[in-house]
Image (cartoon, rainbow, N blue to C red; front, side):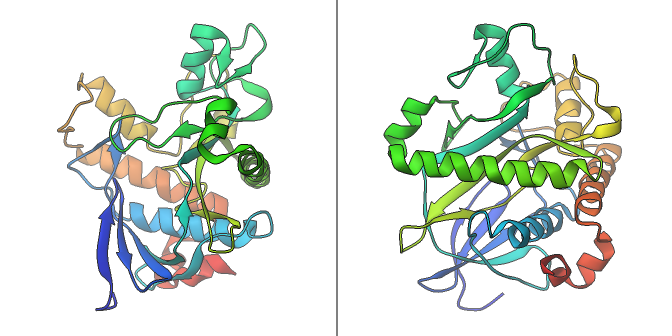
Length: 287
């Protein structure tokens, strides 16, 4: 890392460094969080999977919306990126009824202001993908909001631009993934504004941390689905009766190995690149 890099922030998974007035360095650690708590056990190579997959998607979606990527560094976990003014929204797209969307539907029949047909089951495919933004919580859980609340945060015109870009990104990636045996049940993005006022995709894109990836050949509505994301670790944490408050539990070796295997399999299926090849040359995902 450049000696000029100055540490300016830490997230649950990433460390953020300032390179200069226009560039940042985003370093993805191997930390894993469940229920908004960072666990004491790391998942080897997890940060490299997130960085490589994001680079892969950034390269292939820049015609839909520009992104912050400038370069991937040789460690496979560091991204040089443009500085942006980030929007105060988590941009969530749902293609299937799962997670908090399923809970909201059970309670009210509505998900973030979208009325859905009666009689849907858990994990059902939705009639159309839904844009369901949430607030960015500094602590605790993000809160689902409706269109009117989101427009108050970013303005009507910007909201419409964000919704359109998010749905186009989801449609592109979900078609790519489905052709390779993975259903993207839902995903979330972070979008920012560049100095010219243009919308820019930032942070990460279609990773096992920001998306629910389901194996298509095992898809069966009416129940939770097996997954290539951190649900495997999340299920373990629930199975031992943890109260979901800090500190989180240590993960046993088999859960660590199983989680890593799921992340790597998602990477290899989606990119059609051997993970070892990415470790040898991270730029392989950018071609």
